[in-house]
Length: 138
Length: 178
Image 1 (tube, each protein chain N blue to C red):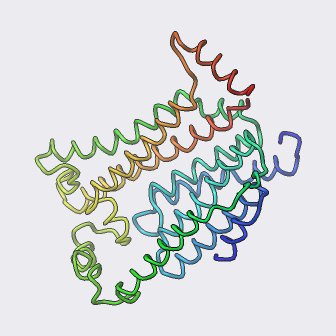
Image 2: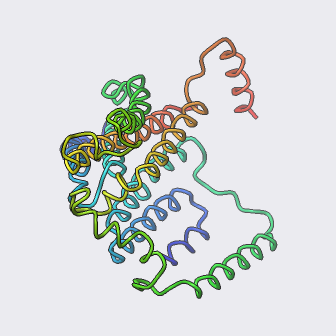
């Protein structure tokens, strides 16, 4: 689809806003609808749109598959690691209240971190599944 | 939604089927909005209508875009579907009415979450506080499921390395020729 000028211009205009909206959904999930799952999918959609319009090779340059594969595991590790953080601070596993002195502030920090982990894993998984599907041109 | 589903069943052009399933997901998302489940609607629109459609289109590019016409109409699957559907509809008669405050789901832990989330967690979206904090284990499990799915796809479709790479590639080529 490299030769469709309208599609290319529209995608170039849209992709920054899609990424920004994904970040908004990610970090505003405490206050409105949304959270890590939705934000991860929207974030991945921006990369998939880029890959569809500008070709898989360029998309692989923007999001190197080796890095994306590692991010799949890193998001889950961040989530599980926050749980162990609660254990180290003397609480239960995945108890965010003990992460900081103030229990409510600890909950905020824990939710922010685990939602970020969720978003990372979801986005990286979606991007790598797209790469694998689109890369099979046999 | 019902009309979309029936058309999906009748059509043979898989491209149109993929597009219609995306429309079906959007209709489902708007139904969730009407039921005040905006978080679920958000997920349905992003995953069901967005990513799944793209992945199915990517699959169509690898396979054909026409469905083969079945040579016979099997009666047994239709019977199984009808019996299962009838059983499910019969089961809905036992369910409490939508939004019933005396329903078991609204009496168990929901009042505690709704009442205490404000001062225990301190964030306005109770859905997020239940999902991320009260039910943190469940969400960790969900993320593990996504991780496992991603790893499984990588293992199935990803680049084959190691000493048996050449042999496996040869096998695949033979399969494609058939």
